[in-house]
Length: 121
Image 1 (cartoon, rainbow, N blue to C red):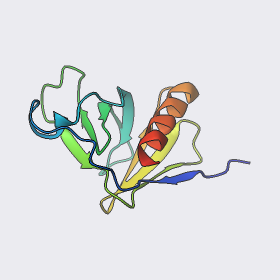
Image 2: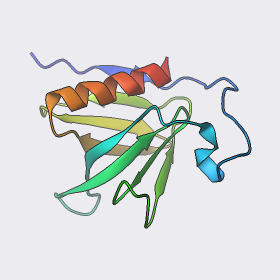
Image 3: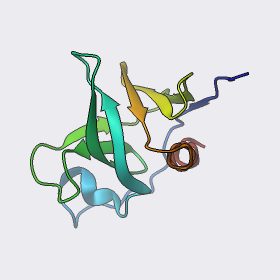
């Protein structure tokens, strides 16, 4: 059967750099970046977005050139990531919000889940 795997975000140690890049991007290199589909909050549709995963936050925008509006999701303690019944989908819960994301392939989904699990250990 399709088991649901859940992993929980832990408290991050003081590994983030200060200064240098502006704002949230002062965290250094992204752990993972790439295209994912985000389920639209107001409809049943999906929106293709460029995602950047950092040790303490997830950022997304419309294109990899980072132009336009960038949304930031803090990945605080107590957040979780879990697989859902659909083949390429997974759900992130953090800061009282829930997001359903979808990868293009099973391999991409596995890579994203692995990246989230590296952060939340």
